[in-house]
Amino acid sequence: MISDYVGIAPKGDLQLLQKLGEKLRNRSFLHINSTRAGGGVAEILQRMIPLLRELDIKARWEVIEGDDRFFDITKKIHNTLQGNLDHISKEMWGYHYEVNKRNAEKINLEADAILIHDPQPAPLIEFRKTGKWIWRCHIDAANPLKKVSDYLRRYWEKYDAAIFSVARFARAMPIDEFIIAPSIDPLSEKNRELTEQEIDEVSERLQIPRDRPIILQVSRFDRFKDPTGVIKAYKVVKKYNDCILVLAGSPATDDPEGEEVLKEVREYAADDPDIFILLLPAFSDRDINALQRMADVILQKSTREGFGLTVSEAMWKGKPVIGGAVGGIPLQIVHGVTGFLVHSVEGAAFRIRQFLNNPEMAARMGEKSREYVRINFLITRQIRDYLSVWYALENKGKNVLEL
Amino acid sequence: MEKSIPPFEFRQCASILKSTGEKARNLRELNEIIARVSDEAIFHHTYQYFLKGHIYQYTNDFAQWAGESLEEEALAEHLSVLDPYEFKTIEDLRSALVAAIDHYLRDFPEPREAMPGDEFHFNETITLIFPVGIRAKNLAEFLTAIKYVDAGSIYYHFYEARMRLGGGIDDFSAWIETSLEKKDLAEKIRAIDPFMHSIEEIRKHITDVVEKEARRDMEVM
Image (tube, rainbow over all chains, first blue to last red; front, top):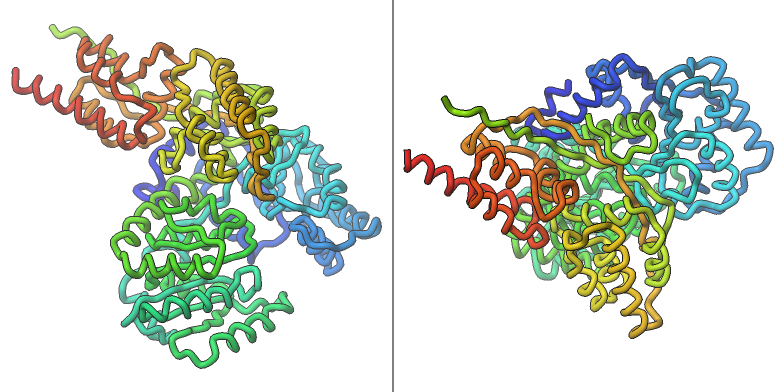
């Protein structure tokens, strides 16, 4: 319910949502992606579709179907757009198109606005019938493999507009390109307010002591998240401040490197009884929420990152955050204002010590962080932006729109 | 009978960011693109900087990038003193930006390259303006409202209005002068330097001067 966000989201965002709702009432808005569950896109769509319907917009969410071969190909496309080296053959591109063609025969593509999420369903544009078509890129496409992005361009350029999460992911194209940051849902299980009792229950179950400051990083066990760097920083801090370190992540079953990284991390932590490595099952949203709320300092010491929404999740809980200056992290952490950006293990250690020794500064930055997320990274702002893009495309050529 | 006063209708603006697809890796490219990019892009990187709440070190995106990403701090300082509200047109502001960078490049002809991924990306915005459903019929109501509205509403009436109305005039002081006929109070609001404050500080300054005036009115009665 939109009314549930009153008092949480900025008033103006909710008012603009209502105004845009009045303009787009009874119009149809179709979203298409490639998975119903799992991943950030599905998570946001599950929450967004009912909110759009509440605004009397006929929102619909369709999922394209494909076999293993199709998803192997799209995984390769995804990875190469993120800069990995790989080869997509002519046959693979042909199959990518074929599967989309089959889906186009099954899915009703008629709508006033059609938002296609990510590259898997991008070829559906070839079967457009009505409405404004918008391609939404959720992935880090700052340094894509040129051959792959050049090929996909044939689809992208047929859309009315594209949406990227970060300005530097955009590229010179003859269509409108909008920049819309992703968002977190303040009412979801991962972000909602928790009672002290709920937090205590989690700390007891996971056996996390609360008698000393807690340093936390929530992330997959992936080298780009630099978990060993986090342990190194903790070891430096430990010489000065008694504290514990919690590294929490889910097992990455689809990531063969995950096991290896976890092993490395465990070896590196050795037998330090104050390092807690938690392997949480998928969808442990409440546990993550509680861990973030019990932490004193939260790290996202990534060396490469898409947007890194875990940073906003931590900031929303009023915590001081230290993040690697990569991907979308600098958009969330304003250095020295809503947290600290670091470029090294030493930098991370220094900033952790600063926070542990200046709880007032930590609290002040935490407060600023929460407000920064409230204004910039809540789901209501993202829905507002999607509707604004649609409305702007219907009023093309105007830079100022009065509602 | 008291004459009816047209109420002050609070409005607000929100922007959606649009990429121009242009990016600069060094000062020469920055200058060359500033010279030809759309007015909307210049507007966004200078005037709309105030929407970000002054949490950065400099006063516009160009200065911020020169100072933080290129570490050309002298230029960043120079660009930071360019007050966009002193220029009559975007074209004048554009020329001043270009001249400042040209001047710097004459003194330091070999500027640094930005790190990959840290280039300057030129964006522009589409602005949506909407009423927020708050109306003030007198100074007391205005005082309550100004404390309550979103920062986006103060931006629209105090900063954006200057471009719309010209002559350093904002919506608040215009209404106070013409509808409430309080020229002195209007002057006090106009005396607040928009360039030197964050939106929240502007809110505080306006609240303070209006509160004083409202109290004086009350005491007279």
